[in-house]
Image 1: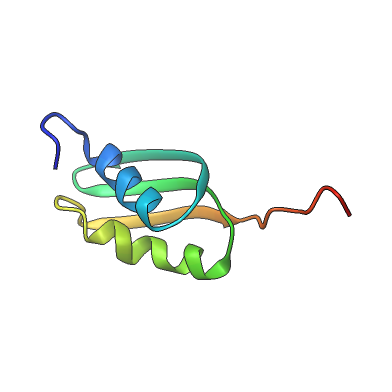
Image 2: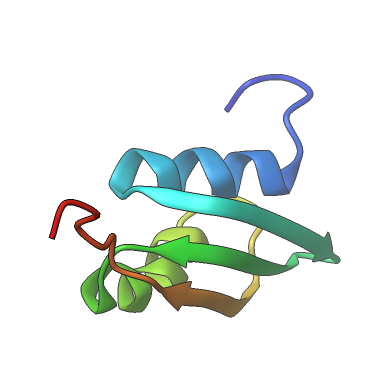
Length: 75
């Protein structure tokens, strides 16, 4: 943990080490974090609460992330 890093910054860092996330937003209040944005797969979407709960200080995760697979623009 980096000194001065907020809970949301730690959650974002942990999630981005595990998966690709776009348009990430996070709010927190008393250890409850609400995350939103997009991920590439349902598997990643389902892993978010587990990964976020591993961050020290997180007591509850509200997952408002969405799955939006990248489309292949050349098709």
